[in-house]
Length: 98
Image 1 (tube, rainbow, N blue to C red):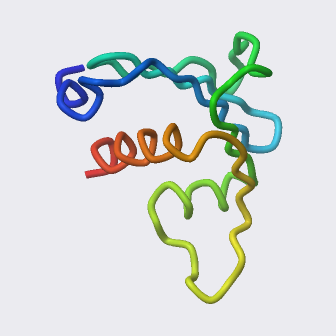
Image 2: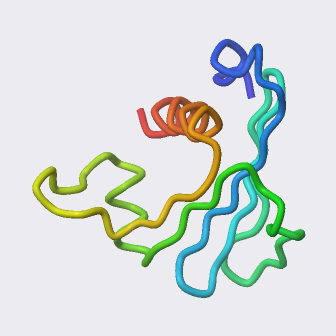
């Protein structure tokens, strides 16, 4: 809640599809808000119209989220979408993983 007030204060509102094998999450941002839907065994709303899609194996996604990918290797995570939206998501991930 309050952790994202500053970083998302000017957010235009974005959506992100995160997919690891057969599990998906829909992440949404808006001014001061960060929400997550889905996960194992959960139904996720339509993720075909998101600003960013991030997909990979569970292990690859965890390495990417925790910024633990090897600098000398190609990423095992596929990212598609708006670079500004991705930057917003990464700022939120930094807050969530501290």
